Length: 357
Length: 276
Image 1: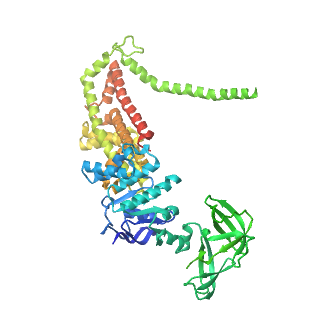
Image 2: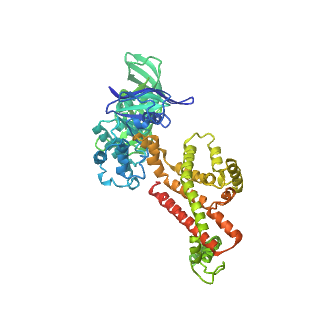
Image 3: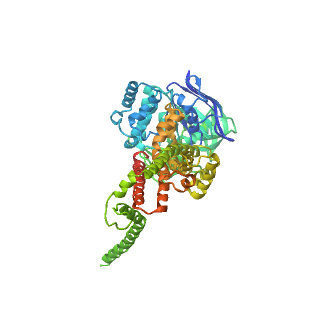
């Protein structure tokens, strides 16, 4: 039994399909991320779930009942805005109590619930402060507490980390996910940040032009992207057009950019034109002097970017393409450093090459 | 040596424009306030005629004005009108401002221009038009004429001040309230209105001051009834007594107090406490 269902949900503005017939089921307690570039329809989808945008067609089921036409105040939806939207003229306590006050709950019960949620987000000491007297992270916790105290069926998060600096963002990510797990609340999270999507989600929904490109766990999406767009949007990747030139049972030979390589794939047929994706971290480079393996390619370091935990090289393969490689910068694994223009060997294992069919 | 000369030169250059600015500003300030200052000083004369500076000082004319039935009636009428006009103007103007801000964008500019046109329209023209209408409905020389007439010139100020506040209002605050269970009405009541209160207060004070000071339009509509500005005018027609100076000073005081409140509220609220 799924908690939230989007069935053929569509929003049209004139002839423009902002959201084009999307289907999605979210289980109880699941954390689902809508990921995509701006204009892909993720925010429109979220606002339809919240009730601020009326769908052109389709159904939206929350907790067993159809919510189309139900105004936002009757939807049992907790919403955290990008800018938090804290009420500037109310203290933290009054902000959090607002939803309960609207439900005409007893004063004593309100106080009890507010205290409990403020404790959960560790804001008891700041309860009498005004929002303008809080840091970004604290403001976000208030927004979260305010959305959660009404015990919604679903928590909606609209790019809630956009206004935080990087360290705080990483910290709040973990904090939010822990809280979400503890309360076991179904969550829809909207972001354009792939790191946030990968690190927080049970499932990621990648969207483009109002349509869903792929739904899957972070590892599925990252390792087995369904399209070139998904592959390109999540993480760094080398993407090439390739042709299958030879088949011996499951062993297929493909050619791309002047290189020939053998991979294993069930689906591929001869003369198929496909795209292949190679993640930069799945390519190894070695010093040229080491014993050459026959299947390795020769090349030279075109550029080098130091990123701390990894070093990113652009390697021009001889008679082949320029390829992006992320080398581990760990000093305890077989660490090697390369200089710009140094000649290297590039090892492309067949497991590293993922055909997008 | 060269350096010192340079710094001297710089000092010379930066000082004079500032001095000229100070002198010029002082002259403007003097020009604007001198008539009022002279009037206020004159109002404290003990003589039966206006002169500057007064030979003797006292509050004789203030006492006379405060105990005069004519002035009392006029003040009472002006206050009555202003007290009725202010809330009506605030409610109607706020509704228009919401409509303009939240309604369809098409035609918004035109409607807004028409709505606030009484601000720039000659009041003589407006007064003449309203006079015709008042005659038609047989309501001239009554509150039924004064209040709507004043509303036509006060509402535009509310539209402008509330409209400006609404423009900077972050609509997601209202959406947040709605997702927390508030209906549209209560979201506006609990969230939007308190946050745009600087605009509401400004609109209300403008409405009050403008209605209280209004002369031209009221002049067209009144026959026997006299508001404070009308009473001042008719007194001046017959004689120039120091009482007129006393009344002017009192009117000035009321207006000034309200204006100070307005500026203070605007600054305190606009300065970051409420508007972030």
